[in-house]
Image (cartoon, rainbow, N blue to C red; front, side, top):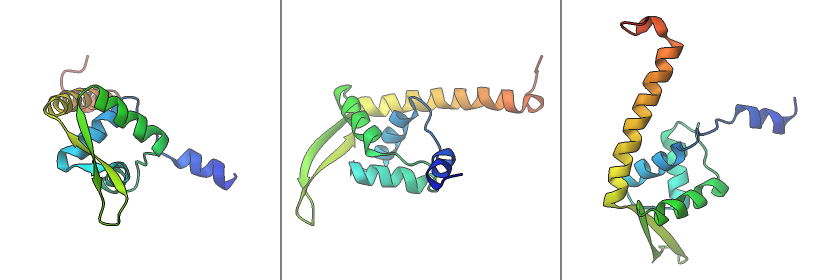
Length: 122
């Protein structure tokens, strides 16, 4: 198997809709610029989840349009300006909703993968 194909097959794809939740959760910890967001997601997932810029920045712009995050330009210590994203109050409410939905989804999947472990299974 080619190295490129092997790398693609071992890559973990993020479920549709979960990237928003991951971004909101990461911004709950602290405001960050795009690269720092991507790095925090990768680091906190044990290097399993890798968000490329082609997915990250469209998601950030979408979340900002929805009012769930806000951004501002700041000068970095090294000189170039960075766009720093932060979670808004509406974003905090959305994160709670997304986490609740995620917990229901993972419980449903666990019920299918381990049907004997759930009480009152028909």
